[in-house]
Length: 272
Image 1 (cartoon, rainbow, N blue to C red):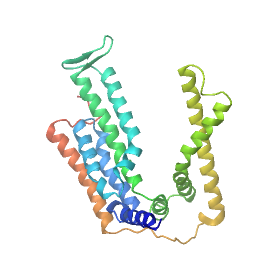
Image 2: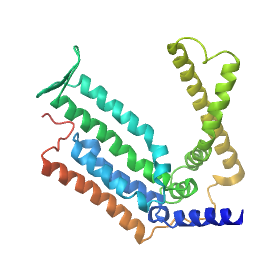
Image 3: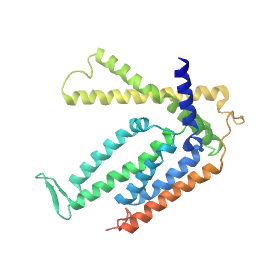
Image 4: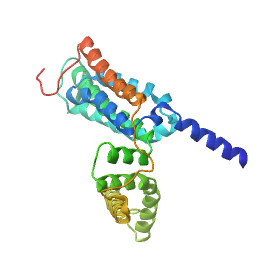
């Protein structure tokens, strides 16, 4: 037992000593914005690929294991693949036809647009996943309240929601068993089951919002949201945070340069 506890403590200490774990949450958020803003204004796969590869290259510096990162990001990968497939089918055809499905066709032009759309979506989401996985919720709340000067109720609500996020899986199972006990969700056609699951998801969302709101108000009533308060852990900036922000700016600039050099840079509100 002592060996196990030592291993867990050592692993946790090593994780907390990672570069991104030691950076201020606000500097990481600024870096994410700097790196992903080019993906918001352009529609090409080169800039998105650069941001995505750069983000994955930072994984060893985040203190997040590849398995944990995959658990948090796999749904985004699936959604991106579905986006690519749907866009390839409905986008305007141009160039050589690659796949003919009768009423739908996939051409070189539609496939290129689909790849750009899918990579753009996942290139924007993956950096945020990495930042949230390498950030302690309490540190983020401290930074938002102390440095960003956001309202206490908003910060406390966000903190409560993040802390309660781990309970959603258990509550999903509980709601599922309760609904099955009433004969809802486990019988009927696939469409009826889908509707039942949608209702269950909505119930889980409502319950999570209510719980987070109640917890935030109770914390505020106990003085957490007072006008004058002290902080157990002051949110500070260091040279590391400057380098983190500079890294985000550099990654965004590299993405723009690579897209322009490849000739794929295209601002979304401009015509081809």
